Image (cartoon, rainbow, N blue to C red; front, side):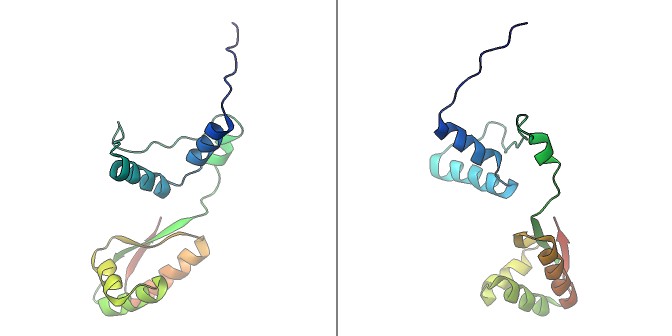
Length: 135
């Protein structure tokens, strides 16, 4: 069986493909939203499909340990005001924005943080009476 000739791509296309392959799930969804809103392009499958490259160690990259975590507020129990204060301090949001975030749970409080920072944030919110998950 004869091998197919290798296809050559321009450096511009190769760089763009590399950027797309390395997008986080959150960034990929933001890209989908931008394509819909700004350019009127709807994805055929209704979502984003992310796949690891098969070439230069793509499988190894997929097996790497997760390094970025999202801290999601799941609820505030009976201590909404204390949770709002903590969320406000953690995010730098104004009072109104922090209140809206807390009241519209489940909602991400911080995204793309280290595991240590996520655990610290979780501890602070739980200490104030809130329920948190790390994804």
